[in-house]
Image 1 (cartoon, rainbow, N blue to C red):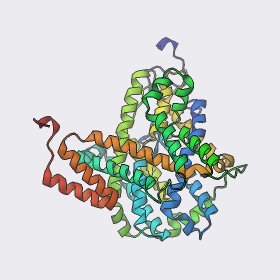
Image 2 (spheres, rainbow, N blue to C red):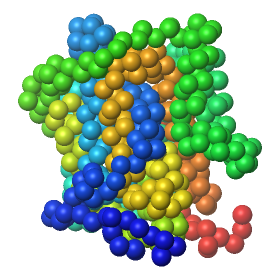
Image 3 (cartoon, rainbow, N blue to C red):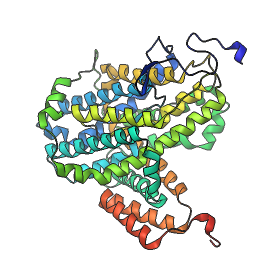
Image 4 (cartoon, rainbow, N blue to C red):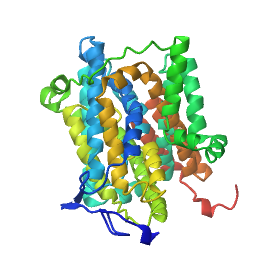
Length: 462
């Protein structure tokens, strides 16, 4: 393998070249890595998932009310926020972090429930969301500088961490399927999309078939997209979704209006009380984020066993610092409901799977991650893609929430081993789902102090 290795960018087994930039390692396209066409195309396709963020943005921030009932402008502003988020995704690999970043997705339903506590006042919601995002920025930066992340997270009992994920799972599913919930009016197309999504993502029957079919294997790499397309086709055919009103040219992105309406320079810094209110949600969101970072570390360890030609250096402290920068930018210009998080699991896995096939397929993980991110940016700028997908975006978010609930739920269950931990996790999860993050964390601490937890290895009976 080594004797057939030929790269203009690095020698065998070395780290991808970079320009030292303090704690960061600057890498630029065509100078430090080559163009990766498959990942760029994947980014064009995955834009549909990014665009689904418009639904929680408009709901959580009450954008239609903020723009005096102008739904068209509110949607364009939501797309502009998604574009800003997509552009700053590139910061990770550019500054030396090989992770494929995304949102703190399991926290979305918790964030929406948190914002709903501030009534219908869009300015109050804006202050609440900005305070939350500024606080999470501060946490990421401090932990990134000090390297305290793993120490802090280890202090929290496993039962509480499991409960946070379980609460996010309950809220994600309940907010979608309840009467008057997100999927009301699109039940048939949403269920059809869910069936295809779960078939592609989790079905052992599909995996067995995909191992014998290149087409099925390729479809499986696009995560939620097959389900979104299925829902769009069925929804349009049966009348649950309107026909898209396709526009050509470039997507109208009202950055000036977005900045004027949402920036901290226009609305001012949130009052201190909003920062205090956000603290329980910040703790919950950070617990979820830390789990994503651990997942990424495991992914890189596995890929390193397949690719000896490139040394991938993954430093969680750098991840924290870049996450801090992303959340600072977004909170200042216009806060982002999904919140900038460390890992887009589906896109990361799809990229790494092709990376593992060898140097000739993908020279460097950095090239794969950055070109996929840039593909998302390009797709968002094309009006025919954005307007063509607009009718199905609420369903795309429904699929995202259900899959998030599934994933967060089974991870939460796997975390707890003893009956004490399991019971506490269930109580914490229900408290978070129905009373909010603050109540859930207090319930968890009280239960842990009163009940205590017996470690599994010390149990002598079931």
